[in-house]
Length: 380
Image (cartoon, helix red, strand yellow):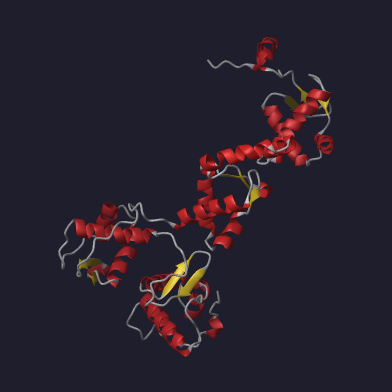
């Protein structure tokens, strides 16, 4: 998507000193005039991205918040459409099509709730709505979100904003709402962008991945599906809860843990498993494990095969060489074995890592406890 550069703006900056409007309204008018004149001249076209809000704020000599509020109002009027991590694109006000897929915002829900409140309570035209504090508790919305929703209804011509003394504002219901607006928060037919992203990632996994295989990162999915990283993060969280994928930290990434069509493809999976080698099955079991978790089992086997209770085992650096892993991985594995009671570490000249008398089988537990009663602490 092509971006408009600050250096390409050839429209005179707004004059805040001579304007009778607030800075926010002045910037809004300037934006609309700039877009209209530039489209006519052909210097910009629909779909192009505005400069970053920080760049526009610096160019216009106002705060980023002022630019953001002006763009938000222009977006409600149909001049722009924005998307997180992408930007703000110039939109044709006469077109109903959208360039970006977006989630329902809190403001959109608040707008629908306000319309529902007006209709359900049969508010008469010309009547004043309750103040922001009361309305926010009625529709269960934050006051700042509610103010944005009220301003949106003002731009739609449904409400009239009247300024009172002491910088107070009241809202008058002036134009009747013709149709009852279904609240998207309670409409089961509405599919959010997160829902769509979940289905798209599922489809990608089904078509391109096999069980136990590492799938693309969230950043890759964000670029692939043209959605924000936050949307992908939320979608992968849902897929993790459904046990379709398993996300691991760092270089371990996320693997395809389950089949999204279990019932339909269960038989096919079972047939495929008949032809899997023992090594493939074992690899599948350990695909999602961290290195220290794999090392933990290997270290246990090493101790059982080479040492007895009371023996001093090699230092961590030597163990790392023996098991072909990093010293940090060995350190984590040794810490876990100490927590489990297999090993004990001692400092000083005669210190090191020692093997404790730990039962290897459940049946030996009672004998071991009888010989080591001091390890059991009874709470009084």
